[in-house]
Length: 278
Image (cartoon, rainbow, N blue to C red; front, side, top):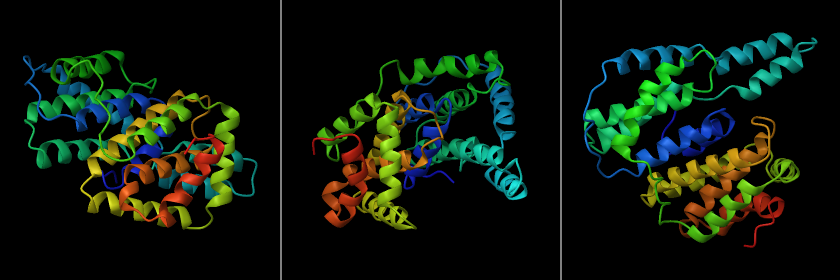
């Protein structure tokens, strides 16, 4: 379900996830790794802790289950409740995120298995930490080795794309109030009907692949997740706003490889609602 080519899907999920900003930070730092020292100590508790947290995450509502609940409740008083559950359900699962990290860091980048395991453990802990059923000890066990292997400092932003404009956009998102977030949501709805947004985003994603910038674009999307979680809003209540945000990020990250017919409609809602100076 999750791939770097479709990093926008991951970003949309993390924008709604309660601890999505923490997960995004872990992934961003992992994708920026060129090399990392091996952990000095292998904690035998980690495998059991990871298994327990994965089990907790696996019990979260699935999209197909939420759709069935919504279908059953249509025309009844429970319809609004089911729709609310549906708005919070993610497209992907934690196991999809684990598979992405193992594929990207291990198979494609060739990082040592011990390093990949530390990153995966930290991502699992970050994802599960918002769940009341997750044991604090398990989260702590999986979190501790990450700083030793990856370091404490955040990763520098990618150097590709329209860097200045991207940083301005992310700052505007982080400062957005509820009114602006609602305005962005409404602007998205007004600008994109049917499959228009998906088709534009597909073109921008294709440009990322063709220009060899899938990792950099994914990292910009993860930065957008962190910015969105800083905004004054309620996760899941304005899906159009999140869609226009990831669309604007995707366009700016490969703006030099796209025609204006793709860039402008992806940028327009954010430009107006967030009063961007470009």
